[in-house]
Length: 332
Image (cartoon, rainbow, N blue to C red; front, side):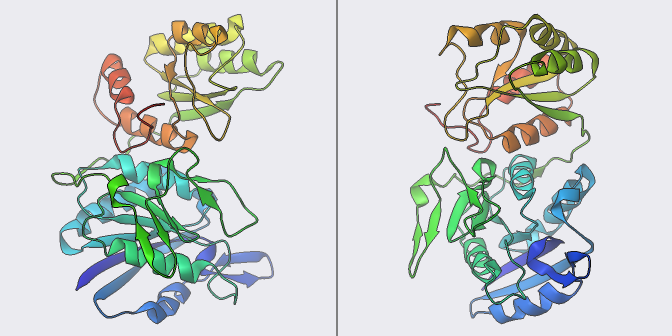
């Protein structure tokens, strides 16, 4: 008998229509989920008292999830986090890094349409999430959405109009749910040796999107003047950026203060590669780290976790380069 704990944080899946638009409806989702009862598993649903639209999520919400999962860890075989889709990929990445050493599945899911609507995708997403959470050899944070199981720290929300809301552009799925589920177990990570949770103590990580024109100067000024724990620079192509003096000086100053500046590509598929083009070299010389094919959500989450640990700036740089949860491709 698999024992599953489902933590319901809010989101479209449990909302109802109001005169002001869709809004959380306390008590609705746990009641509806009773229809998903199946022999061979028990599901306990804990509804958070402050159901939120996930666009309002904060570090405090993530710490509550980390704390609740850690406290319940010995008593359950698997976990489902029911979440709004807007920031679901951020939460999946935070949990993937914060729950080091996990040896059980943590499945994050949500829906594009509320369960109360006849065409809701929430029923399939919840059903697949509960099935994945019942797999004793699945030991990582994953996202169940649109009949696929994705590694949590590789998932991104790429579509707000279709049921295929999420994808992992640079990593294959871990399972596909057809009439017969296909479990790609060779892609799964090995179980850890015991949960070692880490709470977040910083929210001072920012992302900057490079555009042609004045943005490089503005980004450089902000990096040089603002005390951040981490910064993600979304550059072009394979990690290319103009050799703008203000931008490079800002990266140098931030890096000298101990801020980790991570260079990623704006392109959905592909990777930042220092040296692929000569124009990428000045960023590396200024102190930027190469994020390879990491998602922006994973980079932000990893920087938050690193900022929450008592490490020297050099130790943080070295730790960022390590693969924690399968967040980068080996060949990237």
